[in-house]
Length: 149
Length: 336
Image 1 (cartoon, rainbow over the protein chains, first blue to last red):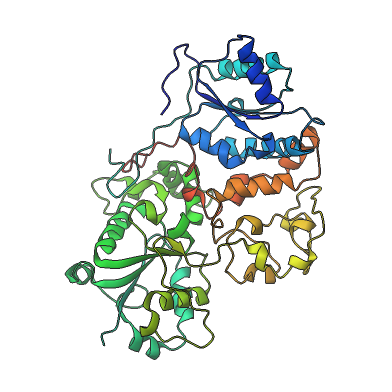
Image 2: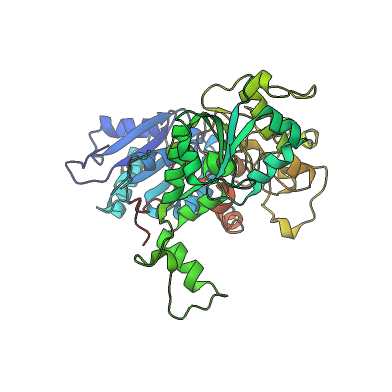
């Protein structure tokens, strides 16, 4: 379980792509830009790899917000991977809202390799929108006698 | 040679699974000669005490169907686990939570209020909800969420389906009892199941679909159509017609009965072996089959898809990654 960050920012996971958005995040780091302290960056080969199962798993494990960041349309190294991510994003947002995850907790962001500022801005925008409000994570361990309260 | 002992028990169940077991028995006399049924509420009268008198591990296989919805179901499941050598989770409800699992999108207290007070055809001016009256009610309390059977007790193997086709029931019995059970010449014969095995195919339904040949080189969907809006072609792949079919994200082994009845797959066998969360994977492939590249257009298409959770998690919500609505308090005894 991830604890509360020292700067009070919520726990977020960013799925980034090796060709663009991870580079953006990395160059943000090199330029000493400040990112939210509890942002966990996961590098995938392509934003199209960000399976909805991964997003759900991130929320289930305790994330307050999830970002999927990919190459801008037309720039995907694998031609259409980022468009797949876009298609899934539109539907996944709907599913998540039925499951109790509000709109502002899940975002798809285009960030090309030189766009460190864009990536940083997106991360802080989500951190601010989430604020201190967590989705309810109280879940008893299941098992024959687990969960008795 | 003593006959193996079996039991068939139901928790929160529609009765369809028991029906499929009845359908799977071609000759009841043969069946009675092959196995000794010690408990089967559908068919015979036994008391709780009769079950308690059996030694622990005294039943060779117990087929449990239905969802764990109340405290009584949980207790019975635990008692059956003690009395059984092997537990077979039979049917979608026991395997994944089943259709009842969609209740996990709501609070239990809310479900009761809806049933007893708010439903349009109910007249209950005093707003009495029997299950929640502590001193007068003998009814078992609702657990706050439905869980699949394997979260309550350990399960030895699963027979998926809503209900499992009768052949699958028969093969499960044969797999469990091998030579002692009359094996027909036509049976495919599974090996004795390893613990945790799902007794169906490992791959998705598409592999065995009768419409497989009609899938075009590149399948692209322009927009989703609802079943009542079209008259489905009887030979073309449903996805190619814009109809939502969960075949690609569903385990095969059902004989594609629904497809042959001109209805798209609703995913009752659960996900194939390599998929953790059926609804999420279904959403993934359905979205990526769309032709559109434009966010506004995709939003329009999504608007015509009103209930992703209900459709994609129809049988498998409790077994999914979230198990229901996140934010649902999970105290096991509270119903309000």
